[in-house]
Length: 507
Image (tube, rainbow, N blue to C red; front, side, top):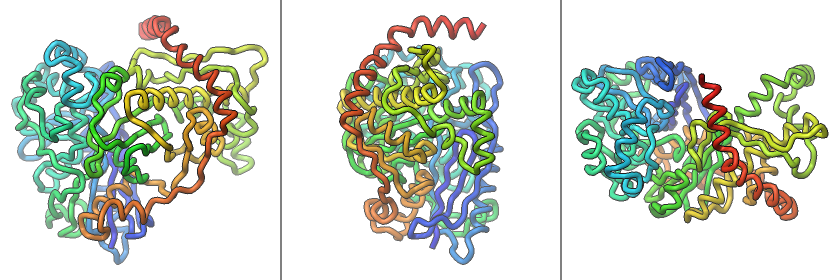
């Protein structure tokens, strides 16, 4: 018996088939481009996404020999929505989270219901990245499309409807819309009334892990999935990644280091404190049980190393080609011990939490003629770790405690980076045996639904194991503490100058 987890992302779609022991039987990936109609707008062509969904499912289904899939569950990017007609046709492109067109609509909610009330209801900081302000933009700026729209659907409920099922949206993705009551698990009439919209335009909210329906003969023809395969509600990609990494109790967190770095932490109650709101930390349903999740992130992490590789690393690339080593292993080799004394502000793509400042720009302070290349490289990693320690500290001050970080993504392949992370943040950094955590979460939820596993807890216990544990070095953590305390003062001191630089650059 096989189980398929699928992840629909901002630039591509992946499907992975697992057996009951968590081994990968087949996988497929297909890219699609983001498009930028005008400055600040970011969209996807929904037909391309749908075709990618069908293509990867067909490829994976063909790749499973003698082990037909019993269940499909989907992990997906948050906030992104598409206006859909009653016949399933797409009426407009998918508008994704970083799209900035709805600033005016978001600002209109600052008086009524107000930022504090928005957070109390939805667990989301009032911001234009979320779905609700963009729905208001559709009504205001594309009234012809709005009138023809049957439902505004996010991607899992879009897929369900295209498969001939009722569109249903799990609580975690509903929580990313800024229109969902995260305590009572329903669409918020107060938020929708303030926005001038009706809940009938949105899919029915359901708990992650609930069965949405079965693959019909018609759906089988376009996906390759067998008739009768269960379709099971999955969730937002970050808590799905957390589930796939075994984050199913409070005080646990997964630290995913790729292009961006995101810590997803689990806790057992809604934490809707002023400190959470002030630091732009969300609070919304996890995909497991009655847990909640929050995200702490920086928009540039692995992308900074890639920037360094592409612009300054020609000799490293040549050495990697000649030696057969990974280029990042070459770049990160022979770094100096101890703090560099340099301070990287890693806002190469604006800042994530706690500031959520789109105008922020990166900076490097402390340079002198004694700084060599390897010191410079280490400073890049230190700055990313300082930024994530700031997030961990502020989460804990807001009432969300983290005991250890289960590390995934490209950054988890570097022992140096993992030890540095542990030394600076002061939490154990732990690798796990899972490489496809988001898709594996789909296999877990699907497997529980069809009875392969007795519970999510049982599945996680069977499939997820910790491997290497990088404990903080107490002396090194204390040494880095002096530098970290200076780091947290840097952005408030240079923010205005950074904004002025951003303004000049945009002219």
